[in-house]
Every structure is written in C-alpha cells, then in structure tokens.
Image 1 (spheres, each protein chain N blue to C red):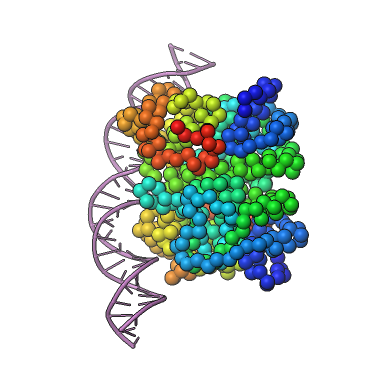
Image 2 (cartoon, rainbow over the protein chains, first blue to last red):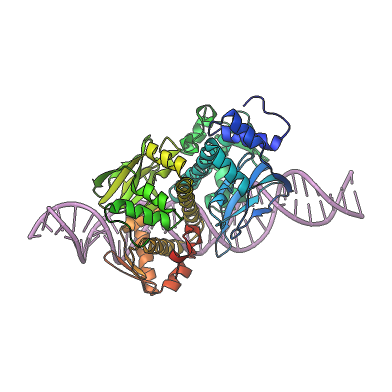
Length: 250
Length: 250
DNA sequence: CGAAGGCTTGATAGACCTCAAACACAGTGG
DNA sequence: CCACTGTGTTTGAGGTCTATCAAGCCTTCG
C-alpha cells in the first residue's frame, strides 16, 4: 500500500482499510479510486443516518470517529460499534432497506457519500470488490459477536481492557497509533454506552487498570504500559478482527 | 412458495427460508434445489463446527435447532444466535477462513453440508443468489445488534420477553408455530446463556411473565396469552429481522 | 423404577447502578 | 488576562438487580 496517489486522500483511506482485510487487483483499486462520491463535513455528535431511514447511499468515514447505536424505550443508549477512517459503517444498507439503528459522529468528522447504485455496479463488475465488501460486513458481524460475549459474560474490568485492546489494534492497522499508544476519541460515557456500563463504573475500573500498571490515561492519550498484561486482562485475541497477518497483534 | 417438490425436503427448507427474506427467480430456485450436499444426523448438544476450525463447507440446518456460541476464559458460555431449519448458520465461513466461534446443536438435528466451492460457483453464476446470501448474513448481524442492546441496556424481564417474541416470529415465518404458540426447543439454562443471565434468574423472570398473564409455559410449550402485551414488555419491533412484509408481526 | 436432566425455591452476596456533588480543563467573551 | 461556561472526570454514599450456592422436586425415558 506504499504509493497511493495523493489526489484523493478520502479514497486512499478506503483502499488502505480494504487492503487490511482483503486483496485487491490493481484494476479494482483503480475502480474504487474512481468512484464518484460527495464529501461532507460534520460536527461532533451529529447523526449521519437514523434508525428508520431508508438511505440510498452509503457513508465512507474519511476523518474523525463514528459509532452505530440504538436507543431503548427508556432512552438508554447502546453503542454497537466504533468506526475509524476508511470504514463504511452502513454498508449493510445496500441490502437492508430500512435502518435498524443510527449512525453518528463522536468527534468532528468528514464523510463521503457513495450512492448504492455506484456500489452495486462496482460489485457486479468486479467480483473481487464484491467479495471484499461482503467480507467487510462479515467482519462487522464478528465484532458484534465478540462484544456480545463481553457484555453478556465478562466483568467490567475485562470488558474495558478488551475495548482498549481492540481500539489500539484497529488504530494501528490504519496507522493512527504508534506502538502501544493512541489518542482516544471517546469519552468515558461513550465507553460505558458501548459496554453496557455506567459512566461512574467505567471511571472506577479505568482507575483500577491504571493502578494495576496496565495503562496510563492522561487527557485523551492512552498508553498501554503493559500490552501483554492488558491483552490478558481483556481476554483479547485479535482473531475475530480477521485482519491479514501483518496487521494483527505484537 | 406453494408447490415445492417433495423430492428434497432438506432443500425446500432452504428455499422457504431464503424466500422469507429475498426474492428468487425460478432458475435460481432450481439451482439451489440442485446443489450437491451431504446429510448428517446429529444428537443434542453436539458441535458442528468449532472455534478455531477452518471449514471448507457450510452447514444447512434441515431439522432440529442449533446455536452459535463462544466460551470465555472462565468457561462461561455466551450464545450469540439461535438457528432454525432452513438457516445456514456458518455462511460467514465462506469469506472468514477461521471460525471465531462454535456452532452446535441444541436438540437432535439433521444438517446438510455444502462445499464452499459449490456456493462460490452459484453466487458467481446467479447474482440473485449472491444477493440473497449476502442479505442473509446482514440480517444475521442485525440480530446480533438487537441482542446487544438487550444484553447491554435492558432488564432481564424485557430481554426474556424479547427473545420469546423473536422465537415466535421466526418460527411462524417457517411454519413451525401456530398463532402465538410454539414448542420451545431451549432450556432455561440456554436462554440464560443467550441473554447473559443465570438459570435461576431466568426461571424467576419466567414466573413473573406468567404471573403477569403474558405467557403460559407448560413443559416445552410456549403460549403467548397476550401477544400485544408480550411485545410491549419486550420492546419488540420485528423490523430488525428484515422479513418480507407478510411474514412479520400480527 | 431409577437415573438424569431440567425446573423451582430459599438464602446470601456482590457487581454495578443511581443520585448528587465537586473538580478539572478547554474554549469563550468581556 | 481573567472570570464564565460547558463538558468531561472524579468521588462518596446508598440501593438493587442479578449471581452464586445449595437443595429439593418433577419429568421423561431407557
């Protein structure tokens, strides 16, 4: 993934992401780079698509950070996934006409919209792109499964260690983390909404993780002081991310 | 879906299932009916594929009941989905080489194995089949999302009411439930493992649901005495199942 | 009929929640 | 430059939902 043209930084993000999970031919890469898309800037905490919508385009996250979430009847929020630049968080809308959840930004972000028809055409013409996109949605589901185990069966301590591991690995895969440190784009409340915990409890467990020497967390900067230990504490095994070899752990 | 040939009951299950979520041309139906597959009978609580495996075939559930699950380090089990006849629970193995979870039966079942190559060939030749299968895996993910909300943010009472609703609707979609009653193929322990609850607590909440006149449960027979009320109690909205119109609620 | 699995019940404990308030820090505006 | 505001973090004190442990009971089925 060395020399991507710098003409379309938003497309390069996408290529980098796809190449972290699948192989593309040169022709397929060119086709992706040529996709028509319209850019849009958004502030923090803005919805991109809402539960109940019937979108006719998919959203590529170019910069920033986003999440998918649902609200319960009593107004509680469950975040179901975090998304980083290069992700197409609502790719599923290609075949599921009604949104069964919402997609929103967590920090100021830029997104690119690509019409369903363009994507259809691409997948019809290039089986490799279809396979890569399908695989992407399958990995999505794999992450849901992993989170479900955490929320259902693991302690708050383990769960929090686990997301921190996941975020670090995923940031590394797109070059947004050095070694074992990264800028966390999420608040403690958002971590709570993702893991089914209260903000207060997240805060206390975070202190415990610090006390155990696993992490330091100053401002938004997360450092895994003991990467090995953090993985063990979080029962973290990156297999479920289905990254191509190199990108994985270490 | 009136007159399916009775020559291959295992294939008809599949067609019925696919037709509950997508449209198939006559030619595509014939292609599915012609797929080579090998049948196998299994007892209760037997694994079909295991975490870590690299399967070269997919499994079609013909009769019985199955679930996908993971075990935590301490040996706790999280069930991530239930599967009914017609489902292909490990379709994701088509593009994710390593299993990140296990698939097992809950009652004596028959399954049919279809090689990945056969499915590849079919999806390459028939875009409609590819779309239907892709859509199936996307619905899978939609169910994961819904469960995540339940486990993370809803009370045990709501969660249990919710699964009961889901099971009833899905059984109805394949003709295995009359009105608002069905044979539950799961134990209370399994419901607990699916919802992140202990067996004891499942039992107590079930009694509460009975006490509130929402259900009766004698042996394995579940009756939703108050279907409306049960849906409200479970905050159940079948949209996330993405069934084609007719099959949905009522 | 006996065994085995599943269901039910009671008592106790603990993980995590809720409420409430104080603190820290960054950005805004006078 | 310094109050002023707003978000996010931290701390304290209960409270509760759900887990765990331990029996007893009921079906089902060989």
